[in-house]
Image: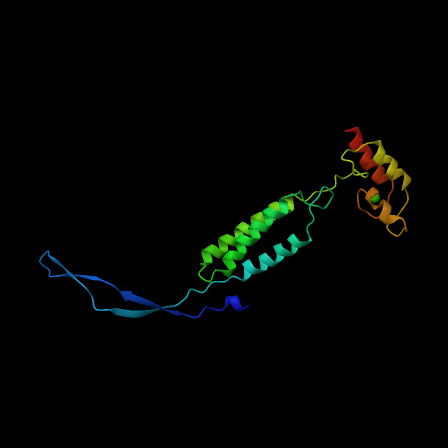
Length: 185
Ligand SMILES: [Ca+2]
């Protein structure tokens, strides 16, 4: 990537505006230096922004597809704004031509932490809560019973797939037993 190539060295003009002259006898004579300037060539340190850029791309993709709400697979309201703030902070570092490798590495760490925290807020279905009402009870057993025997190749599968609690592609005794065990706990 282009970002891995060293930036060209730059010339930094330095002007001497005033100087104090000494006569070596503890006395100082205020003097005005003649207008002088010199140019110091400073080789820009090689910084690698590729990992930060890649991370930003990844997080931005997750951000744009994430949906806020209360359904399974969604994210709590407000969580996207927090992630977006973290993306913006990382983007600022990427576009800062004076950013040091240390600042870039810190930005990678911070964005990674924000991304992990965001992913942790994703709403997950409770295994066994087939009806999705937040509790596991006889209603869930009823749904599994009514879908008993269906397999992933059944035409009604998309309607009843949530009854396949153990995700083995068939709704059978194993799923009923799983839910029954949770109810009896
Ligand atoms: Ca099953």
